[in-house]
Length: 247
Image (cartoon, rainbow, N blue to C red):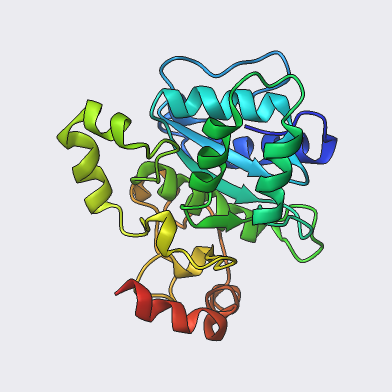
């Protein structure tokens, strides 16, 4: 789901789709479709990638598709592709309540919780336009996105009647979903960013994708040892205190 009025965002969406077509070379049906202006979300959609850019949450195309996804009980994975992106603040939500979203006919009372729920899931940061983003880093990120999509993600709709209606299946999903936090417990501005190298307790090593058989014997990356080391130590220090919360 991408803000189709922003060319840069659409380009990034196609880059992500291309990376995933490599990661899912053995399962092409899993490669996501970029929803361009005329496209609406399909009825069978279980997972969506939300490409977070600029004012995407004021864009009617983005919000109409997010509401549809939420009503289908879809799970979502946010991907941030630009340095300037700011997580929605309380002031932002107040403005939405006041101004509404032109051409979006869903009640704001339904929209606000959906946007909040997008960020219950740890975002992946991927900046294709950044000069330091090499193809090797893109390939690592592509496999990381695929691995996250193959796991259990946070639902867009956490309203109690939706959970009741689906009975046990949803509640067990949520129990097994490690990063789930009730909204009330999230400190304001407590942004949990996620980096390919910290997706598991063995932070400091890049884990292979779940089905390595898809890749050639030397791996799709061909990273030299020192590159792997450099990638795996990025920001290690910064994330350190987060590990205590998680375990």
